[in-house]
Image 1 (cartoon, each protein chain N blue to C red):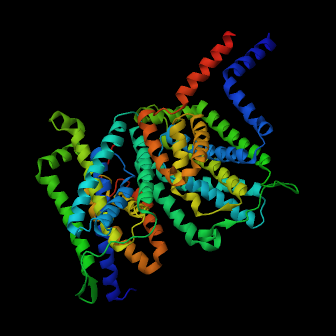
Image 2 (image 1 turned 180 degrees about the vertical axis):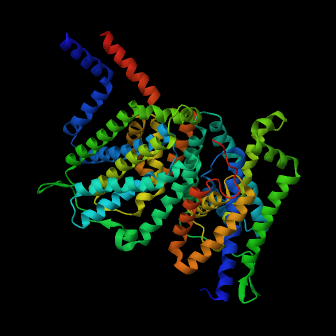
Image 3 (image 1 turned 60 degrees about the horizontal axis):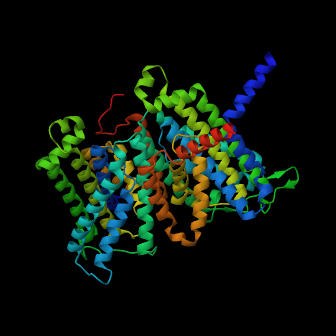
Length: 295
Length: 329
């Protein structure tokens, strides 16, 4: 089988992937859990997050530091998420055939955003510099500090999300909306605001995921598609709408993908995940932690 | 007595479908009126996308089943027929085989329909689309990799080869395919199956409580639509002589989707009208190639928000008022 030293390397790379997937799919599942819309534009939003940071960091005019550019990006992307909520999602949410209209509209939004990125930034590959240079030795392997930092950033963002949902008033209101919309309305919670926050925060998550991806891989106008696809694998496994399940599932998917890549080659990773997805849908459609809906 | 009745029925049929018959006749004599190859090419392209869009719409709009696999099924049809005909099989047989293979895939994909809620099917088919795309690049021996398959032979009748430079036979072939597909849709919609599907779409729980099997009809519909899509894909390859992974591009996903939305979701004629509008308008926008998809995406959203019923509603009212005026005269 796999020698133990390479096993550790493989597991570590799976862990890093899992962190990125967790950010990405936390966005998808968070938005679905609260406002019940499946947002296909999130992939393009990740692309834009990466491009915004790139243009603040590397393009000639601004030359901001990493932390500042990420903060500016978070603000811009949050506003973009709010805009997409108020301009696109909200007018469709309460009409007939909301689910399908939102599915189609977010695909339209994704088309718009991806091609706008192509127009503005061009199709040439871009890459963000690593957050920090250097490597450290962790047991038998050498790991770049950059990757450890990625894991730290992703995990701390998820912790912040958990604190937000459990400790703040707005977070509690958002959770109440997710659990029962009518009851939340009766308690005087502004449901529309919860929806807006959900979309905005989901967009921020995928934006951050885009930045972290852009520092490992390349930034292209279509870079958001594959992470979005992986996020879909993750939410099916973890249960759409369950943040806890999604975070566990991201690490499971990350590790499975890393092992499949090591054993079978890079092409076969996706088919393996796809088979797991189908199996999951047939055996336990609501995922490990999803709520079982009575129909 | 009997005879008079028959004539009467025929007359009502004629008056009921006057607009449809008029359009069919117009499209039949179109190549005689305008024998411009470029124009005919645009018409053929519109027919093809109309078939893709209507078959997708039968699932999205009529059955309320959202899936992303339409282009995947289209490309399965295209590749099947291309591979078979390059191996020496007649394109006609290839076309049927393409339909059957697409239907087979749809059964495999539709199998989870029975188990899962609608939204998971979107995730599943979205994943299927991208795995198919990466397989097209990876399985180089079968699919030709990123180059795709070139020199796919054209259709032939006996020894007479329908040359692609002659657009007219392909025009009629595409038109017949669209007619058959629309006829099948119309028959399904008017049949009890259509009623059952609409009932399921509008209120699934109530329909189930009245004894409608929710899976049987949806899967049957999915298989039929996939068959027609696969056949259409095969036709498109033989017409273009080439098929490559770009068939699964984002633009190709957006085109039929926008056609459905522009024309009117959940109607039979809507997506057909939508494809014609879309193909001709985007041909007009050829000069600003880069902005085309940006405009399409934006247009899709604006249509959904401000005109969710599509162009069909105003067009229908125009048609009915026109026919009333004709009756008065």
